[in-house]
Length: 388
Image (tube, rainbow, N blue to C red; front, side, top):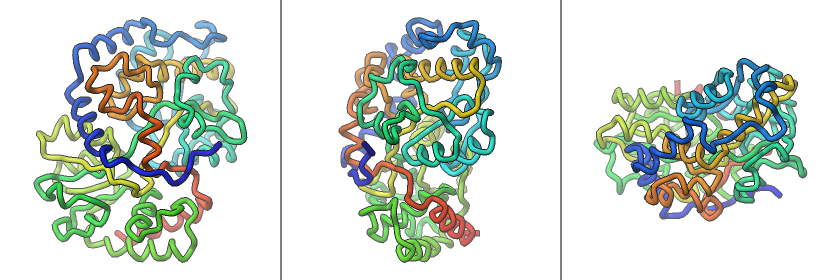
């Protein structure tokens, strides 16, 4: 079963996400802190895979992972390293294309590979990842079916869900009013001349498709539609200050006052909310820009047996409900394990959608593999080149 490509975003999701991230930025309640403490102490938060011994895992002294920013924070990494006696070394991808390319060209280098619905087909076809042994996934059955299905191809499981979300549009509230921020058309607002930043990634095409009304199947656009998208997006050139490749880069652009609006990630907004003194705001646009997603964890191809077992240990660590609660507090993303709600304050559990993943994702356009990824990337590169 494939995730449907046309799903719609709830009007309540923007408020839901904003409150969730504000709570996350404030650190949650005392109950949240207790959960974090328990995780750090070992507690019930993930033992090794049932079929792997600690001795085998420690024969992989460095666990290299390729992932996204926010997924290898000290809050998860340090207690894992202390428990298993091995080092976790993250490499961060800035786009889906880079995520595929690095894992494919450096086969054997990454025991843990971030997988999502938009790239799992390309990753599998490139031989960058291997099917998972579901019997070694301690928390797999706890994830909602829709999230699990997003990472399955022809009956084989290529990743286990870690979290999900809907990417927000982030803006400087001293430049734009909330009632002006109702859709991606706001990017052409005269107040944003020279103040826009855009993610250097194929999501540029999905933004253009939304603006032009091509949302029926944004993952299989024709050349004619792509030409129209390119033409429309290039009219943004006077508005665009720069494109960004990492979350840290966009945070700096906002805090330095170089940009006032950009599509972003929930984790970027969480950091800005912590540091911005109420200056920054976010909106989540309905049925727009293929901005919903499901991220998971996979295992790289051609890795040693000890590192494979260490990879399963990391996957079980990150999908344990207690550590999933820590992930919510760190990033603001929705947890793949509804049981994470038990380790969150009531407010954060509700506002993060911890128990409502299937309901909320059915109301957004969830990213899947584009039919022609190379063509999409070429058009993206041409648009970005036109901004310079």
